[in-house]
Image (cartoon, rainbow, N blue to C red; front, side, top):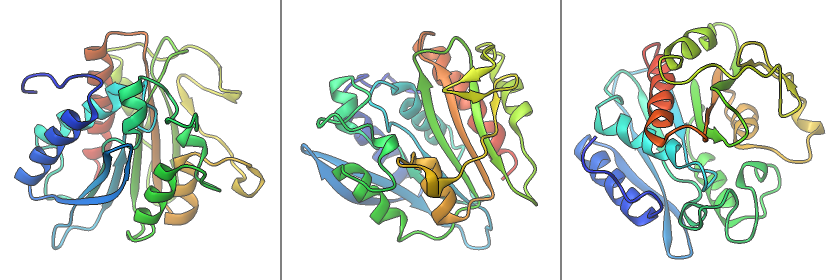
Length: 248
């Protein structure tokens, strides 16, 4: 990547992302504003391409590696002409500026997708409703409690899962999370394949909204361990994402 972006400066990060996206033929799509910061999506549709791939980052302000990984991937040309791309690089700009998981009102945006109380989630949902169904979705995250990398996978036929290959790629940078129970869910060698009943859930994360509203065949939520060095976390999230993109 070029010179580093100020870590907790949403304007600088979004400006850098917008410049890289424009240079690569992406369309900038503002879908809201919060505390003076724009909420931005970027899309590029390639004639003749089939897969529709959606990636998001920065829904928690204390997880900066997620947005930086997406920026590095964009600048490295990872989003080429093989697919239609839909990118949301910073869903919680105020949280990033404040270095908090939640937004300015104390709302965890990643629990706000069933009955949105936040400006950010409501605006994001309105943008998502204007998009086609996605084939593959990736949500990039960090976890301050974990010591290693782990992921959530949802793979429906005819899309084969890639969880083992993803964690093999990230193990060059961080070990696999050893815990067999993560956030109350069973994990097998860093892989969580939850059986969800969205209708029974009071709060929806972004991933559940995507699953139910966009009929996604292949979904991953990546969690890098935030206690590791920033560059290592970024590298692990990049490797995980690149493993999925190679199959698009």
